[in-house]
Amino acid sequence: MLSVQKFGGSSVANVDRIQKVAERVSRTVERGHRVVAVVSAMGDTTDELIDLLAQVTDRPPDREYDVLVSTGEIVSAALLACALRTRGHNAVSMTGPQIGIHTDGVYRKAKIVKIRADRIREALDAGCVVTVAGFQGINEAGEITTLGRGGSDTTAVALAVALEADVCEIFTDVEGVFSADPRLVPRARKIPRIAYDEMLELATAGARVMQSRAVEFGAKFGVRIHVRSSFSEGEGTMIENVETNGWGEAGMERVFIRGVAHDANQAKITVAGVPDKPGVAATLFGALADERINVDVIVQSATAVDKNDISFTVNRDDLDRAIEISKSASEELGGGEVTADENIAKVSIVGIAMAQHAGVAATMFRTLASHGINIQMISTSEIRISVIVERSQMEEAVRALHSAFGLDAPEGA
Image 1: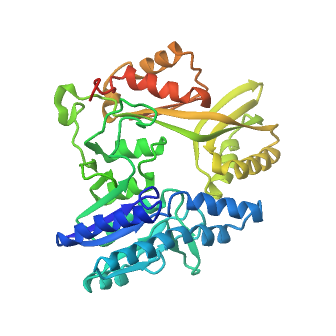
Image 2: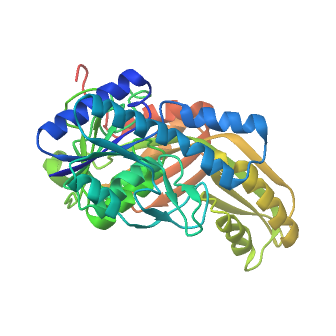
């Protein structure tokens, strides 16, 4: 049996925790399994590297950015391999390029094109435990690229596909996927099984348990993903195909809203006074897409005759570049001022069955209104409703919605 196990930054935050990860991997090997262990950088290493870079330059070349931040995972992989060797296991560490993860040419947010896993297969066949530096690959020009924050999840699931692994386990600092962040909502429930679509929407909406692209890989190739705690032996959450006819595995008692997610790492940009004519949105959002800047919620409103304001949200990490692009596009279009607001957050409710229940949106909006929380923007899909609110009201909004949709665990549970 082949197991791909991924350990996040909190799981390998220091030497003691790396030793504990080595113990867990060792137990898996002793049960007769072959193991590929994908690791993130230790603790806050990536943030520390980015801070160092900011002390050198405020405009780092994307190539050098990727070269620098990829080193954190390499350190973790090498340390884990050494810890496994002290336990009597033949272990070898490999970088993303060494195991044949080939990406497109985009730095910082590269996408995996293919995996040539011959070298890792040879190591496994030789009886090695392979520890892999997550989050990275190599493009056609032979340059190191990174897969974006949370990219080690994507590395793990993609390897599980390429190697036809029996299981992909994502070890993190929580016991699984919860109905909300348990740090914000103490009575959040652990979800034993969740459908790919629901998990993808939760991840996209801000749930940090897994990177959304990793869930996409799982759904596309049918990889069952087990999210569980690094610090306990309990069962976590299985992400897989969950048959749901609107009621799901729990029968008529199934809660039709699966979870409430939040994302405080959002910013809103408004481009004022753009002409009300075809092609305006295509020019603005096409320019942002060319730079791989993901746009989330969009609102267009008429402010004068033949003039519109366009507001949209982006990840705060992309804000400076998005403002520059928006200003250039506004000038090209004959638009007006470009402004930004970082004091916002996104709050979302998710559930496959919600489309079959009338009044979900009304309940959400009434709940927020009763708590004095103003909605700035709204976005919907078949299984998700997201709202943009003031960041200072985000936590209250999450807790209120969690209760309103009956997701709170019973007292003492």
